[in-house]
Length: 245
Ligand code: ZN
Image (cartoon, rainbow, N blue to C red; front, side, top):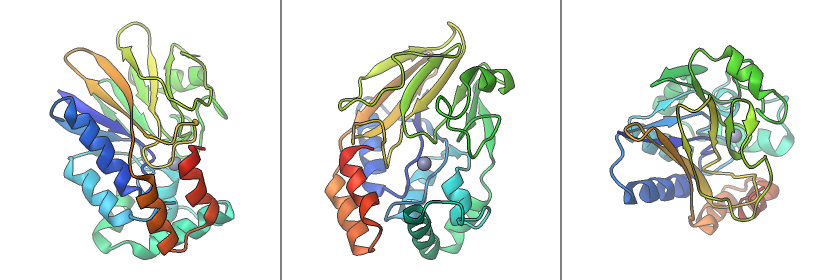
């Protein structure tokens, strides 16, 4: 079974389409896991949720999903972010809003805990930045953990970040094997990478081989930027897509 692992898509339909194409080029997908922030920031919230759901994805809630549907207040978000998320909220149809409102904060599947931030603070902890990997492992009910939120692609084994947590203009491809210690993996952000490489980041779990392959897919960044310009979304949010930060 091959499962697509995505996070922080942020209404970037072109990026999600490119990720699915790239993952399917290596073989058929049997399902998908998503660690939240499907919407917010970007220009295509409804279409992005529909495409994710068409994969039969199991998905947890991110802070931007929660903010966009009014589960938490946008007042504490920075101004660009609040403007973009209020715009996202204004575009939602009933079906999309209900899907987002019903997302759980954590899920367990195949020995993985899925959570946006970390088990200690599912919506808020930036694992590796504001919270500790060992604490996450102590609290997780499963051997391995999948997170999002920081928009950095990484592999952490037994509390140690393999290759560190550095910005890199070309994100390296790597493969993590399960079973040798406990893993925390962030597939990176599909729709707004911040680790230096503007390509869409994702991962694929192969349950037969017990491996997670961390990958990147080029997409039409200008198409997303043009859609954001047409929606009059904040300039910095448009610029950062081209810079991967
Ligand atoms: Zn995010």
